[in-house]
Amino acid sequence: MRILVTGGLGYIGSHTCVELLKNGYEVVVLDNLSNSKEEVKEKIEKITKKPIKFYFGDMINEQLLDKIFELEKIEAVIDFAAYKAVGESVTKPIEYYTNNVSTVLVLLKVMKKQKIKKLVFSSSATVYGDPERVPIKETDKIGGTTNPYGTSKLFVEQILKDLYKSDYSWDIAILRYFNPIGADKSGLLGEDPNGIPANLMPYIVKVANKELECLSVFGNDYPTKDGTGVRDYIHVVDLAKGHIKALEKLEKEQQGLYIYNLGTGKGYSVLDIINAFEKANNVKVNYKIAGRRPGDIAECYADVTKAKQELKWKAELGIEDMCKDSYNYILKRKNN
Ligand code: NAD
Ligand code: UD1
Image 1 (cartoon, rainbow, N blue to C red):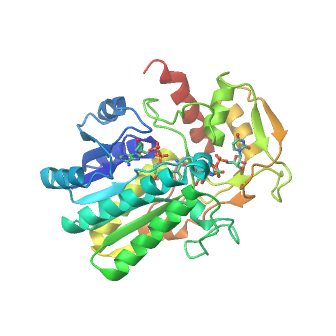
Image 2 (cartoon, rainbow, N blue to C red):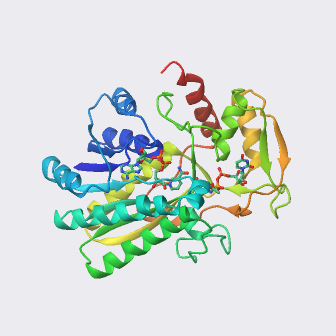
């Protein structure tokens, strides 16, 4: 089966390309390199010893999408292409809504025209806003997002639901990721944001590697076991495997709209992560307690029963692997 992977050279997309190739799928990537590098293509090919086809371009470009569908005989799409920096989305709402919503409308228009109706979409636990309870089930209330990034995911989910209601021959999986961290064991793929990282693991890694001095722990007065924020961290390779299971589900069912949480179902606090990282890598992570980060919630972790039952998928890798592999990528980065 030939899959178009939009945003396939990014963090989650590249790991998913690896899993797709390992599972016998053919992969065509469209990426505008706004947050990735072309050399990731060769790295994916090095890991899998299989080729991928790469188109440099923007998903907003309808003619380019038409051309790709026609030339490549695409049978399904996994859509990762989006901007993802929460803070930046607050200052650049037009750019975020254009890139995260308008591009999806173009993609859907082309898919409809080309009669290809199988889509896996990257959504986020952010659609739950401040959850009413944990663990969060797919049927729990969504909404209450506090930034354009989160709202863009909410909008696309609604667009996909409306689309399915209008035409039941669509076959769509919406995957709500929790907090992906970690990297491919090879150290060739991973996450290395430019500048000061906004998210916990990329920050920890840079402190451990002495590129940054000290981690600020945002708040220790939350109603959690140690007062720091609790999240459901998931290894990016497990997350990538979840996409294969979602595609298999779409192939089996032929039509439907399915929503799955992809997490481990376990919550770890910021201090848990620091401790686990220090232990797994035998390094010190300097940190200090700072004030709460605006917009943060106390606890967010998934109920993963639905994915387990319907996709026959569950996360296999634990926190030690996540910490080791995140650090390994940064240590090997210079040699790659
Ligand atoms: P990423 O930035 O590493 O990857 C996104 C890729 O899409 C990049 O390679 C970028 O160059 C490309 N891209 C962006 N806009 C494009 C466009 N208009 N046309 C073509 N290519 C475009 O991000 P990621 O962490 O791999 O996230 C992938 C998806 O998963 C995103 O939709 C993101 O919102 C979602 N998601 C990510 C997380 C996370 O924590 N990483 C959590 C929940 C959901
Ligand atoms: C972030 C995004 C969210 C996205 C999710 C998925 C923000 C505000 N939210 O969520 O939209 O869906 O990633 O990956 O970016 N922390 C520190 N110090 C730091 C960085 C983080 O203490 O320097 C704490 C946070 O307060 C939080 C935890 O670490 O308790 C995780 O933070 P982060 O990695 O940014 O992820 P989320 O906030 O869960």
